[in-house]
Amino acid sequence: MALEPCTKSPTATLPAATATAELPVLRERGQREVFCGLTGIVWLHRKMQDAFFLVVGSRTCAHLVQSAAGVMIFAEPRFGTAILGERDLAGLADANEELERVVEELLVRRPDISTLFLVGSCPSEVIKLDLAKAAEKLNHRHFPKTRVLNYSGSGIETTFTQGEDTCLASMVPVLPEKPPETGETAELLIVGSLADVVEDQFTRLFNKMGIGPVAFFPPRRAANLPRVGKGTKLLVAQPFLSETVRLLMRRGAELLPSPYPFGIEGTTAWLRTAAEAWEIDDAQFEAAIAPSVTRAKLGLDRYRALLSGRKAFLFPDSQLEIPLARFLSRECGMELIEVGTPYIDRKLMDAEIALLPEGTSLSEGQDVEKQLDRCREARPDITVCGLGLANPLEAEGLSTKWSIELVFSPLHGYDQAGDLAELFVRSSERRRRLSV
Ligand code: SF4
Image 1: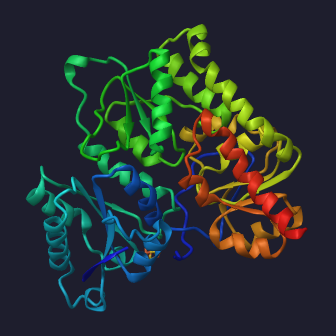
Image 2: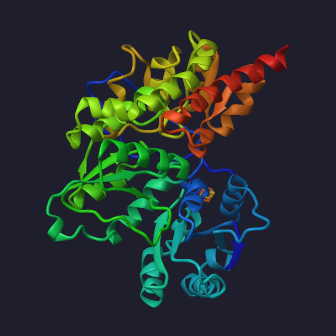
Image 3: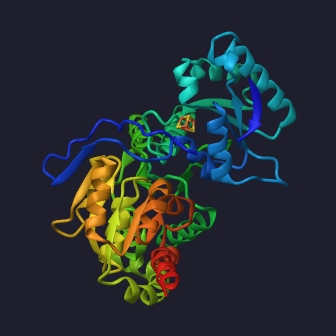
């Protein structure tokens, strides 16, 4: 086994379907095209600057993370891959011993690491390497200087954003308990990684409304874990965190169901959910958001005219599809041909589904060839899809938007509403210019 700085993921099966019986949802369980959960390392290592992500996997895994995150020449990277060699895979070497050696060397070289994530992959799962046990043993040796946790980023059961879910879920058991003397005093916990600039904007708005205390999960430093317990109210910022939310609720937190803060309407609904839980009166709420809303309207107006009346088709990839479709339809005036999403968790998605226009064609899961046929037939103006589908569709004359870009970019909140619309304008404009 060797430590290497860290694209292709195989198709995989979907998580079990959730109950959506009363909704007209097309459920497909065929071949699908997605990246695996290792992709989450790309934004998580930027968010938690004192953490290190050690993928235990193959050269393919190393290449995936390396090419998705880009090569850092001047900075010490905060991710890497412990490559399982042929001897490890054949069971000739003791992979546990090898892994321990790699971790020891890493921690000697990088004493700044406060949290080390051992990240499982398809190969480590195939050879049944028990990373939970390895993490426990290493944590026993290195905590409190370095906490060692583990989670799976394998492509066998995930879509790419679930990597964040499994990562955050691995942290929930070690979050400090809310002190008993605080009783059930309300505290707001924002769940889901947000760009620091967006986090600061939301913090200012919560302060203006008088909502608090507010904490963010994941935090900017993995060592500064937020506390949780009775009285913690969860406002979820990313729609793909089913397991994390379930575990936080098991620790006594209460979920505030809400649409997600994409676009002006989504952001207002999201903030209002918190304001209602804190019983902030309407006048105070409106006064707090008014300047941001005015600015956001100016930012969005110039793009609405370019998107209005155009047709959008969303392939299932990031789990952001339903909130994005709601934004494209209600705030940009686009017509939704089909809204595909990898899976629907009603607990986290009902508030969004309720805002989709009546008769929206919603699909869960994928049978990629059939879905491609539907897309070709509809000839949408913009197709939101994974990287694997984008090039062939572009070659057929369709404008595409990479869904992964929508996860990497800071797009939540009022000040980013115009940027979000611009991303869609840009891809269709690019095609228009190319075809002139
Ligand atoms: S975890 Fe699996 S799907 Fe992801 S890069 Fe490694 S081998 Fe491929």
